[in-house]
Image (cartoon, rainbow, N blue to C red; front, side, top):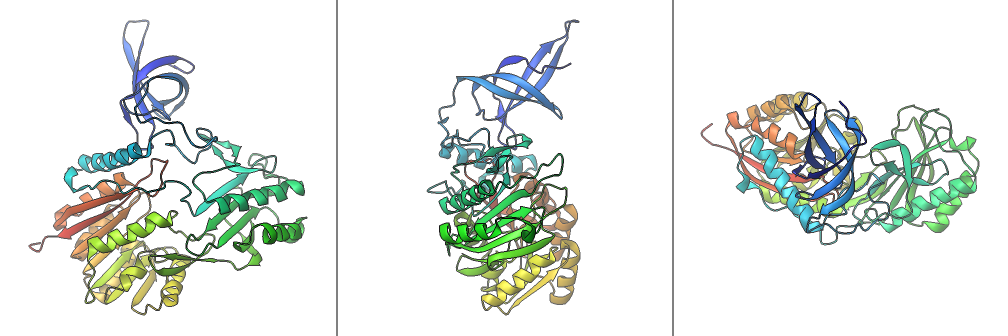
Amino acid sequence: MSIKGETYTVNIDRLDERGAGQAVVWRDYKSGNKRKFKLTIPYALPGEKVRVNVKQRRKRRWISEIEDVIDQHHERIEPKCPHFARCGGCTWQHWRYEGQLQAKTNRVKECLATQGFPSHVVRETIGMDEPWYYRNKMELTFAEDGSLGFHEQGNFKKIVPIETCFIMSPHMREAVLEVAQWAREYDLPSYNKLTHEGLLRHVMVRQSFATGELMLAIFATKAPEDVKGIDGLIQRVQAKCPQVKSLMWMDNRDWADRTQAESIHVLLGRDFIYEELAGYKYRLWFDTFFQTNPMQAEKLVNIALEMARPQASETMIDLFCGVGTFSLPFADRVKQLAGIEIVEMSIESAKRNAKDNGLMNTYFLAKDARRGMDKVLQNFGRPDLLLLDPPRSGAGGKVMRRIGRSQANRVIYVSCNPHSFATDIKELEPFGYTLKTVQPVDMFPQTFHIELVALLEKDASF
């Protein structure tokens, strides 16, 4: 049975893990029986009564669009951005910031409760004084007319051209608009994902909030020597965007719609920019994974240090260490630190970053988490402290049990997914670990995403 195109008035029971409203409707059969249909309603807030139109089925739920808000949440506000609800970047601009923070705290508590953990260990979410212009990296796509924008919410075939954005810095926005103006000036064709024809695909822009340096990377299907107007691009960027210290052209002929490069051409400056975080200097390349909100990332690092209480006599493992975001400040406070990361380029960056900061007590290993831990434990023995910052999917049961067997005294878990976090730390209970504190940090205001730092301690009797 389909309910596509039908209209219902519903009460929003709760929000799902992506911050969209959830509701249920019942539909009568001719036989007199009833059938339940689950609705997902973007931009609805908990407790609201809304009239919705059912648009499409996705897995077991029906995506529905709000036609009218009948009973409005007291924290509903007018979105700041004219692109909101079309652009896929923000999902919660219609929610007063205090309400966003409370919802994120509740989300963490709910995820922990599903695994039997108490809610009192969860602190209130740390927000931002100014929850705008916080992102230091954005990826935009060329539209047919040469403008740059983001994929439309729920529709990756359509690009919403962006003239303004309230989550990336003004300097980043200005640089992006200059590239779009250049593309239109030379009438350069955009890439068509369906026919696989055209030239210009994406622009990645990243900025160091500490140094002000900007990086621009343009992804295209031809090398720059085969493209008209390259000198014009360089001259425009030099004249209009003096903060750009890295302008690169990236060849990408692959059909996959990703910001990847088969070859890299440096058109201006260098192939990296400098960033600073918590007093440490980092080099960022176009594909370097680094926290996208540097102001909150510094709080994240300081919270991890406060919870971990690292000592000068201790040894430490930093699992999923990336380019050393947490490794460097911790290495400055412990006897020896071993960082493990499966991406070899990230490990090379971590080594270089440690050297740039004068840290000589680090050992970085390019291996998957389990095998890397085995090697580090064999060489250095039981760690006093272990920190992990896994991908959104979590570390997984095998890695967590390996952490449990390592018998580290203290475990610091940094997570961007409270669900996988709760599932992961459940694996540590049989090894004598107790969850002591969880501190959510709002790294992504105006969205449903939430980051957290947690401390687990091992019972000495185990």
